[in-house]
Image 1 (cartoon, rainbow, N blue to C red):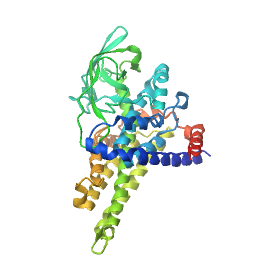
Image 2 (image 1 turned 60 degrees about the vertical axis):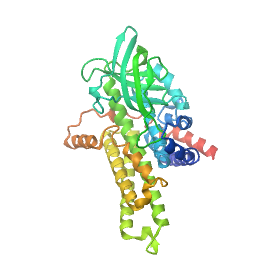
Image 3 (image 1 turned 180 degrees about the vertical axis):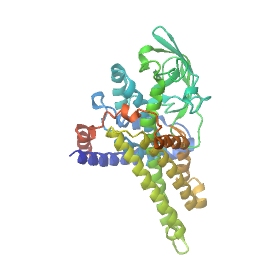
Image 4 (image 1 turned 180 degrees about the horizontal axis):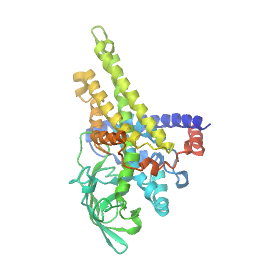
Length: 413
């Protein structure tokens, strides 16, 4: 029964997401590409489906499912629009900190709102002067009685311009134990947004700058203890960020393969379909192999995480494999499309642009390879994050949560 629940729930969830993406997201793509602007309405519409709360326990109003279900949602959205998949993946990082480090009071305040779509959380770690070097951050929080005063800038914050609460990691002291995390409401005095700067891809998704100017935050908004900020940042990145980004890449990868097959079979060359040419068949075959390989890596990592197994290495590998293989396939797709792929009336160039955004977050491919080398050498630091924070929904897929989703989905159909 447990496996049957998983399979049925996943299939119905996949169908629901696909239908939503086609009816609600696809019609927005042309406008988002033309304006290169943030689409707040799309973010809210996605949040209202309850999908940001996919890993939130049912006692807080969430779907109470797991990481495999989360990848199904992100992949399904990204298959149509990388920006829409990115919206879910980015806010899931904010959810992770509340689930893993939040007090009971913080969970009861924020998680029900996340589950209903009333609250989009973000994570704000990266700074202009330190980039991926987390310990190099300079944004500071100074405590005065029952308050902290936060000052500094955060950049490349996913859902920056639509987020309702920012999970901000700042410096409260020296060294690796001198970072702390806070939940900072977007409308709190002292919080402002930098000017929106359109980027290469993911048009419609916001990843911009948050400015903290003497922003006063009560002690009760601190996530975990003072000095746990590095743990908050790293655990969110490893457990949620890498798998989420792998799922976005997987969705775009599927679009690359499916659309390129349609293009190649519909074009004639030398009196036959373009897809019949040996060189094109070779590229299509390799693209399909990459897609299948990436799916195996992503779904295996998600299932291990849901089962509460140590899998930090699998999560790193999922991000590495999914992003790198998707980029390889996108390049091959551009070669098959040739000049037709450069004009903008076909989506293949959008896929390539969107994929470029997935390389750096949660660790570049170079970083993943170095960490995997540590796994091979037995020098990886422990304990693993996947051991410390086993998924709270690890067993839910086989029980009430999966069965409940089956029932709701069947009722809608």
